[in-house]
Amino acid sequence: MDFRHAPVGIHVGVLGLLAASVLCLAGILILRLLRRGAARFGIGTAAALAALVPTALGAAVTLWTFHGALSGMALTGSGGIAALAAGSAEALIPLAAGLVCTALLAAAAFLVTAVGRSQVDPAAPGGGWLLPMAGFMAAALAGLAAGYVALLIGTVNAELIDARPIASLWWMGAAGCAASLAVVLLLAPVAAWWAPRGSSSIGVRLVSLSVSAAVGTAALALAIAVYLEIDGLTAAALTGVPYQGTIAVAAREGLISAGVAEADPGAVRAVVRRDRTYAVDRQPVRGDSLKARLEDLTGRGKRLCVQAPESLAYDSVAPVIDAASAGGWTDVGLLPDGKRERCGETFLVQLPSAMRGHVRMDDRQYLVVELTEQGIELNRFAVGDVGELQVRLTDVLSSRSLKMVFLRPLPTVEYGRVVKVARAIRDSGADPLVMMTEAAVDLFISPPPPPPPPS
Image 1 (cartoon, rainbow, N blue to C red):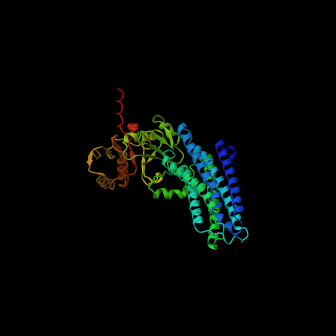
Image 2: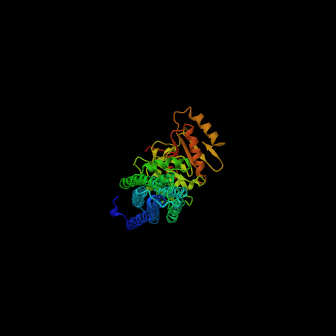
Image 3: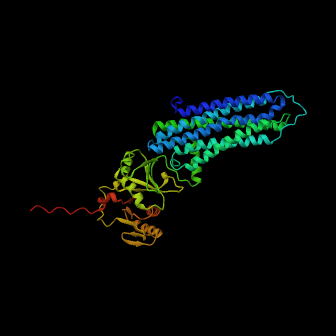
């Protein structure tokens, strides 16, 4: 990512970080002049806290810039994987700059604390453990805020979570950045004012030095991680392939453990929201544009996954499946909201477009499962529940060479029931399982009789 071509806001943010870093460096040098000899160890915590200011500011600027990029995409309805990755890479520049400045300032704080004479006023009181421990806590808070921002941007770009409904996650990051910045700006002057003027014990001296060392080491490690993330996002912006870097890999297991459904980077996800609006590949799509959008995404070696709330009526999901079939997709994965299953791991059902020229419903050997509000029917015979359906199908299919089964949900059935029944059909040994759609009625009607012979 070329910094010269970044938006003006990024340039202003980085320049502000550099100005703040210069002020922090001046503050560290002034503190050192105020605490000479062995008393210098008393200002170790305050110097380390001053070094944290660029990181806290950089995380806040990066989060705000990333939020602006998402808001712009939502308002215009434009962009995609490449646009989101490019905006995210630019948004991470202030965080990377802040972390580098923190590492340099921490090195300066370590040097001014470690180097000096040992003489001190013997009557002046020494320092205790309180200030160094407070410094460690403030450093941990700032590190968590910066790491959270980088993690949030990485997981959104890796399609582990949706770019749209992340308001709560964004506010969590904003609260963390505000808290870390407030703690650093308030605690640094307090630590400088209350810094001991006398000699401290060897243990306190080592802990005081270790605060700066820990801050510098952690900032450098995070800076390298953010640089690698920027590099990966730049590649995603150039290729249009979702970001798959170290941060994304590290986040995946955590999101699965937390019960958050994640999308497979090798999949196209079509989302049906509760207000019956649609999004394909994280971009809003009108109902009349579904077919064209899905048709554009075929032939890329990916699978299509339809995700919708379990309580949503199937007639809200059916337009997506109809459009996929008409757009050339041959199969689709069914994934309800809130499941721990990844889109790439869910089972597939075939669409009528894959059966064209091979299906004649006047042939009585086909099995059709119809899902209604009252229950389940197998070739027009009522079946008690999903368990009984699976037992019956398993028994029937075990003696058949043709194991094709058709599923026809009625429009008012909940999407969660459709997924549950489809899974039971697949588990019974059906291969393939074909989803009947209203847009493909011609595939399931008996052919017309041949014309009469000429007289």
